[in-house]
Image 1 (cartoon, one colour):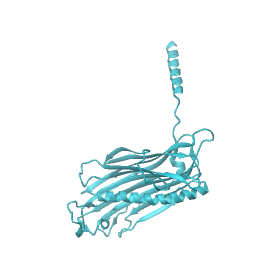
Image 2: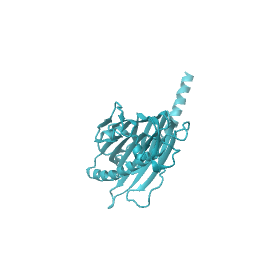
Image 3: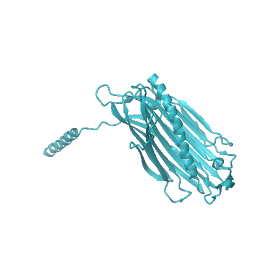
Image 4: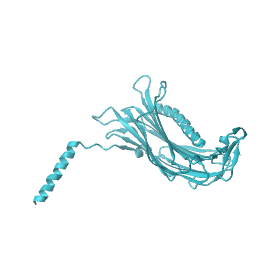
Length: 344
């Protein structure tokens, strides 16, 4: 479970870095009035010494690391397989991380024990555009990250985790000092195998909202939610959502993160860490190669500024509700047709 906690911390740190980049990129995009997106992928270890493989692309490119899932025998003594695909045209992520340690080992610390991990980031910057006439100046925008996968345990009690993070930043440049908000929604699945192999997969959900200007701290955000469809080892299925207000002309920046990892099984009977970190033999994997996908839902008549492959693929309009009066009219018409058929 310690590895899962480390993964969650890593996810949080990764997103903090993203937020800094988001604010900078949003300021730049404000000058160009155009859409901009990029994707980033990373996997570790990519070499026996534990080195990472990382790349970032823009405007509809694809990153595909180790699609054949070639294994790496690490200097730390465990076997690792990592694979990650990021498609910035469709907003799709596919990942796989496998860890296998054949015999018990003692390491200097938890970092030396290592583990297998993959991660992906989507970033999109644009502006909200309203309908030509009518409509509200401020509307609700919904962002979704749908993902599914499985935890595979083949030996012992490996630590497995799979997480998603959505962060939306809004900025209004109408004032001398730009104002805006940061909205976040996070969901993590983690394997309970260390405590109880028969227990359902643990889920951790969190949310926050804060000002881009800082001060006042952050608080839980009611517009964030997670629909957990299934939470078993064989079937992890969820939709992470974030619904927030956006005003016409405001800058909008989205960061979507997916991260998965498989790691060691700490010896929970070892309470003395002064002589090293004891790890038990274990093997397992997290597989989300069925893909995770990003989407944005806008009210009908609204759109985002600029042309970008990712923007074109993931944005859709919410259906316009049919007025109740129209339903009554249609119902009455159907009744009239039935009566005429009966008379005939």
